[in-house]
Amino acid sequence: MASGNSNGSDKAQAGKIKKVVLAYSGGLDTSIILKWLQETYGAEVVTFTADLGQGEELEPARRKAELLGIKPENIFIEDLREEFVADYVFPMLRANALYEGIYLLGTSIARPLISKKQIEIARATGADAVCHGATGKGNDQVRFELGYYALEPSIRIVAPWREWDFNSREDLIAFAEKHQIPVAKDKRGEAPFSVDANLLHSSSEGKVLEDPNVEPPDYVYQRTIAPEDAPDKPTVITIGFAKGDAVSINGEKLSPATILARLNDLGRDNGIGRVDLVENRFVGMKSRGVYETPGGTILLAAHRAIESLTLDRGAAHLKDELMPRYAELIYNGFWFSPEREMLQALIDKSQEHVEGEVRLKLYKGNVIVIGRSSPQSLYSETLVTFEDDKGAYDQKDAEGFIRLQALRLRTLGLRNRGGA
Image (cartoon, rainbow, N blue to C red; front, side):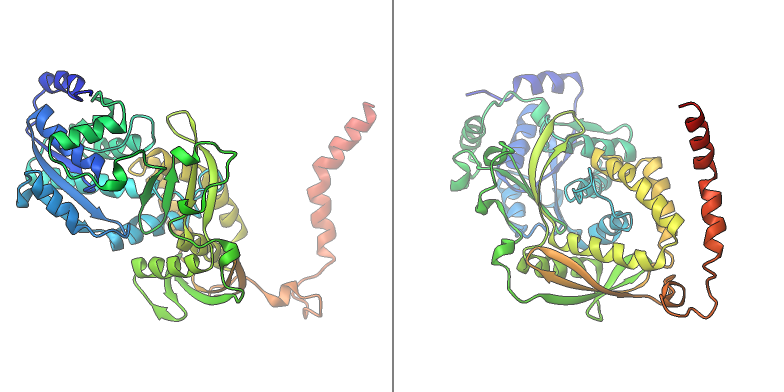
C-alpha cells in the first residue's frame, strides 16, 4: 500500500508546524487526515466540527477525536446554524443568487463560515496552521484557502489531498486499520457517491452520477421525496418578510434557522428543490451534481414575489444584472473580497422596503405564488386598471413617449432604407 507520507514529509521538513486546526467531521477521511498530520508533521492537532444543520449527531466526532489522542481542550464543536442562516444564507438570498442560473450555492456559502471559525480557533489556541479535507480537483480547496488567507494572510495551510500519495479508497482503509481508526462497514467498499449537507442543501457527486446522461438512482436523494409521490392535495403557506429576510411562516415569527428548517420539511414533503446539473467548476472542469435545496427553493420564489411589489423597476433590473457576478464570487470562494462586500452593500440597500407577505402553493415539486401584499407596495390598481382610472393616467401621453423612444430607430431605418 502507499505510505501516504513521502510528499508530506518533504514539506514538513521545509517548515515546522507546531499546531494545526483541522476542519473535522469525524468521518473516515478527516480521521485519517488527523492521524496523518500527527505522523507527517509531528504537530499538535486541534479539531473543529461545525454544526451547520447537516443532520448528523456530532458527539461521535468528539469521541473519535479523543480516541485518536486529541486532548479535550483541543476539541471544538460549535452549533453554527443560526449564524449560518442569518449571516450567510439570508444575505445571499437577498440577492436571489443562482450560479449559472440554477445552483443555489448550498456548499459554496458554507465554506467561508467554516474558514472564519478555523482562523478564530487558531488565534485562540496559538495554532500556526489550518487544514481542510478538500481534494485537489474541486472548488472547496479554493473556497477554504481564500477564506483563510483573507482573514489571516500569514497562516500556514495543509491540504493533505495535494500532499500525500494515497491513490485509492483501499489505501485509506489500510492506513486506518494500521492505526486502529474505526472504519464503518459501509466505508469498506467504494462509496456510490459523495455527499455534502448543511441546513440549506445536500449535494451528491461522483461514482453513479458521473455519466450526465444517466438518470440518478432514487437512493441518491437525501432531502426530498419524488414529486410524483408527493400528496395530491397542495400545501398553502404564507411567508412574512422584513428588509428582504423571511421572518415568519403562517404568521408565526421564527428565527432564521428555524424558518429554513420548517421550509425544508415542507419542501421535502412536496418533492420541491431537486436539481440535476452540469456545472463549470472554478478549477476548470465540468462536473455533474445532484442538489436538493427544498427550503431555499421556496424562499427564492417567495423573495422574488415580494420584491415584485416593493422594488422599483430600475433597482430590480440592476439587481438582476449584478446577480450572476455576485453568485460567481460566492461560488469561486471570494466571500471576503471587497467586491462581494460592495455588492452586498448595494443589495442590502435595495431591501430597505422589501417587506410584506407572500402566499404560496406547494404542489408536486412546484412552488406557485398565489398572492402577495405589502405596506410598501408600489403596485397601483388605479394605474393598471382597464376600467376608469379617474384621471390617474392619460393614455394620450403614451404617443409622445413612444415617438421619443422610436426616434433613433426611425433615424436608423431612414438611413438603411436610403442605402438599400
